[in-house]
Image 1 (cartoon, rainbow, N blue to C red):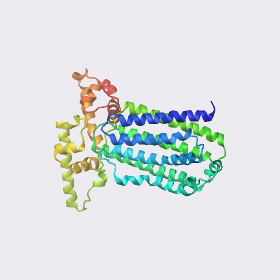
Image 2: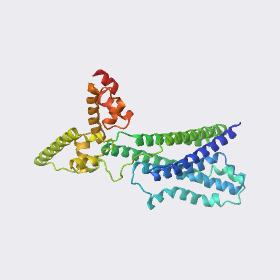
Image 3: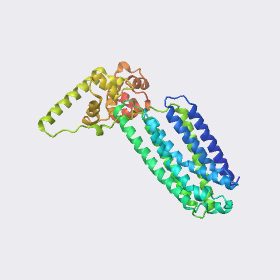
Length: 380
């Protein structure tokens, strides 16, 4: 099997696997259907893009179709961007304003009309040989790179903000969504860097190396898609999103006049609220609820959620996530020391104190005590 046959084989397998994953995402039962559908369309357009590895344009008309097909790659990053928004924010919905993401695709195809799509009288072989040197092709390549940089930076910023909002408002010790989105964004970034380097070889004159680079890109695309399938099979539910109306504490901090009497009064109020909060956490143990949110805690102690967020995240200088887990760990430490409860396993204890993941419990416990739960029990 020569390099071209190998490339075509890898391309066909990659397209099949991408379409298979898209079908899975369309049919899997989940509450977050919009995110799944956006991701499915991402893989459909990825399959269309990858089909270029084995499509042979034998006529001028087919060559035009092949050029049009290649422009559909401009749909991929907008779809991934919208997918990330749909995963991060439970109230995200598609709106008419999102049609702005179609502009690069529309602009490119309008630019291609005069000298590419309408050049019907030009011999196919002559046209194809000079195609890569046409300004229109340079234009789409530059536009693709600019588009990629814009969306990849935007996605990293969305994921970063999502993590901060999650830690400030939720006590569920699971950062699966953040880790998943961060991982796939890094994978896409790495893969695109390799593709960009491969494209540079197109103009280097090293056609043999360029062909092998295409084989490498096709193999990477196949591996990434297979990785997605494994993730999707292990995690068919797409993660819990946060409400897009939630704001970071730093964005809602009130402006305080620097008058001594006002500052003293505010400090007294803050100290009273902190004392009340700590007393409630100790006596009522709301942290035992694994799905506790800052909104629910605010309702329980009758403090506006905005004030409670500022109190914990700013005045006490802790994320709500860490604040709640500290009480859970203290409760777990007490149980681990209690000889009458020595029959309880670590798994039973972590569920009893409000955790829902062994890895999250071990991470938080070691962060707080510098010991694993088992080591702490043995040392007690």
